[in-house]
Amino acid sequence: MSHIQQNNKNERWLAIATWLIIGIGILLRVVVFLQNRNLFIDEANIARNVYERTFAGLAMPLSYEQYAPPIFLWILKVSAILFGFGEYAFRLYTLLMGIGSLLLFMAVMKAFDIKKGLLYPLFLFATGLIFVRYSTEVKQYMPDAFICLLLVWLAMKIDVLGNTMIRFVAIWFLLGTLSIWSSMPSVFVLAGIGVYYGTTAIKQDSKKLMPVIIVSILWLMQFLFYYTTILKPQADSEYLHNFHKDYFIFLIPVSLLQLQHNIQLVGNLLSEAGGYTALVTIFNGLMLLVGGYMLFRKQLEKALLVVVPIVCLYVAAGLSQFSLIPRVSLFIMPFILLLIGYGFNFVLQVRSKIVLGIAVAVACIGAFNHNQLKLLVKPLRNEEITDGMKLLENNKLTAKDVYVHLGAAPAFIYYTEIHPARGQWQTLKYAHVLKYGPNCEAIVQTGGQFGFLYANGNPDEMNACKDGVLKHMAIKASIEEKGCGAYVYVTK
Image (cartoon, rainbow, N blue to C red):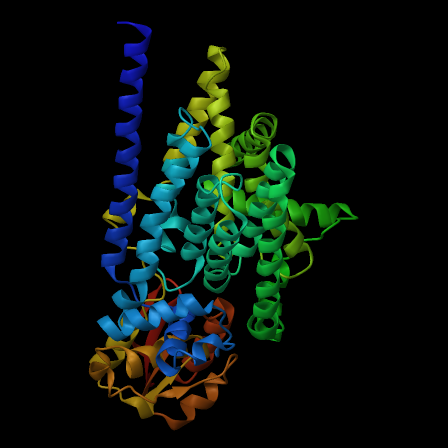
């Protein structure tokens, strides 16, 4: 067999393996979508905003301590109007974005000339829990990833040198506008695109720098308007600031503790994207560094296109303007995996059989440990509040005898007042909603039988509440699942 024939055969097998991984990723997302788990607290609060507000109202700061971009919310509103206000309607858009992100991620890696090293990061992206979960959840995190990948792909397709000023500015003004109002972190990627085009223009035709400057100014003006009118009022929320404060970094760490804090948060992103074991995290970190170094050496403009958004995220987190909670920073994980893939692609060309063997072995370990193929047979469950509600109903409890912990209230309100099947929960509607740290012993003074429903509560608080009640009453029936549960109490 000739060298050319062998290469053609290898490329065919690579193409088959690539599409097999894509197919597994799509199947995994569709199966988890069809499992139709309950909406949890944040999803329910997004659904409440969509249900209660007009399209114009969704362009204003949201209620219930939520943030989401207007276009994202408008799409959810249209989907809910067309298909009902159930889980499937609310999650359809994120499912499509999850599938689209898979295809785009593959296309972007190919555009970066990643061939042999493509399968490893693609498999991580296709089967990683964080990517599957947020492809089937009512949050903007996977649409963020899709939009950011799409912007990178379009930047490599739209040539600043081959377009007139008016055409270039018009195209990118439209794309930038849609991105900014669809995805807040897209502004980081737009910064990378501006640097990418600017560097290209400076190196090849300085006259083309002007349209890049013009469109960059238009993006900046729009983002400042968006930030001051919608984002800042939400970012200034005391609740959200306290929630995210531990996930900001020190821009310039001046102590060992600050440096450790930064390393831990960055390490969390790397682990969520590529694997949780120390060995795999170290390996991915090395591939990330190798990939970044080699990309800067070989393709400077493309390197800036990917690295500038990462730097912008770091600076924003250092200025307490963007959280490094992994789900919130999910949009950057494909960029991390891209650099890992580029580094892995370089290592696969090394002639040393020992180095090659170690790299492939660790990559296989990482892919095996990180994948969530078990979700094909074991449903993803999180705060299944309706199981607790069924328990209360089966014990003939009505709203006057049911107490709902504040953490469970958003989902409880969604299922009793908004969900298309809300009629089945009418006997529980308008149950008593308790505050955090409720005085549970005061509830038992009424005697008789009552129900307690909780979700998203502090375990210590929940146990203290239960212990207080058990001083006076006994548990007749109970259910406890991940993140939620319900108890039926009777007088001893």
